[in-house]
Image 1: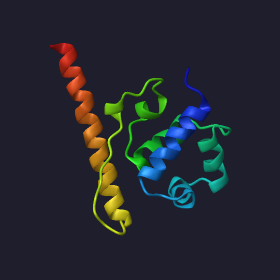
Image 2: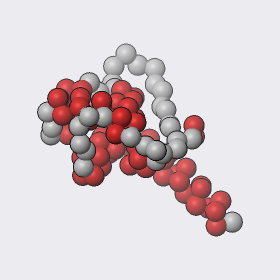
Image 3: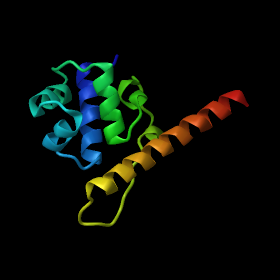
Length: 114
């Protein structure tokens, strides 16, 4: 069974993969850093609107955070050789991650139909 701590850990990992600090992510989400800390620790509540904002910001599907079983194929990592990414670069990376998630989901649907 999925717990708040499990969801919080996935959110923290997604934030780290997005190369955002807690302060940066909290600012972009319009919440306090402490609220983000509590969510990532699994001790603070999260509503679906905030979860959607986080999934959009980090470039993950909501399913990634809420599914009780995550297979290895669902996590999509992108790597670049660079010392620093600016905000626009990170938005492009997250956009690409969303596209890859959608392609994976469409492939699964096609397999089920065939």
